[in-house]
Amino acid sequence: MPSLLPPAQVRLAGRVFQCRRVSRGSPPSVSPSPRLYPHRPFSVSSARPSATPTTTTSDNSAAKPPPLPPSRWITELRTRVGKCLLFGCNSQQISQAAGVMRALATEWRELLAGSEGFLTGGRRGLDGREIVWGEMDTFGHVNNVNYYRYAESARVNWITNFAVHVDPAHREQWRELMSPRATGLIMRSLKADFKFPMVYPDKISVYHKLRAKPEGDPAPSSFFLDCIVLSHQHRRVSCRLEEDIVIYDYKAGGKTSMPSFMVELFDQTWKLQEQETLRARTRIWDLIRAVERLEKETWTRTKLTLSVGDRPDAVEDMGGSKDSSNT
Image (cartoon, rainbow, N blue to C red):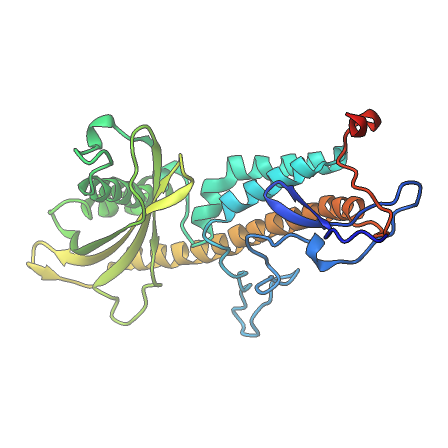
């Protein structure tokens, strides 16, 4: 009499696979059931960048960066690689998985910030700054006012980097921007968008970038900076800040045009931001594709194991010993 029981459901690593019954002594037959491919947290199928970046046809042609990756790409890739390892990998696949995990562990700051055009490095902001226990308030998380202080310290480092390491010929002029002696910078507005509360212990990295390329004749009298505060513990952006800064002439007592040395360096910085966006996004999508290939290889083997023939006299093989059915 044919079995009326439905196909067995096997839950593996949080995924539900369709498994048919196997008849003892008969070879398995592969069934191309689409159910055997688990749904992924996100896929690049709808926004996959081309193998080679597209370029514009203008004289100043520049490579177009791939699309911005999903916001939780670091967490998602770590989870997906872990499931591949749980399914079972050969030595080559383990090496590939280790390479992805190593990249996520050592490059996450550069890739996360760089994918939005932020230039990283200790001289360009704050790198690995320890959260102090006293910065938490009675609500048990870092008080909001501290984020403005983080941004201020990173902004000073961002400006000082130009004076010391990028444009030493105008070192004094760059340093004067941080003082009320001649031409300086005044914060016109500062806005913060808090993403999640940070708590002690944690580390932060804070970076700035130009929102737009300074252009015009005469030169603009203000510019906008975007700032991000990265939590090392969560590997996420904990706060985003927007800074509207005015070029101010303290001697004349009013705003003035951006000095030529600033315009030149900001133009170079804008180009570096575009290059970093292209590099970081390309690297991230390469990691995503590597994980997709790893999933296809490991899950395909699982598919061949689980998708077998369905016969009336089939019995379920749950992986136990031969004598276990007699107990």
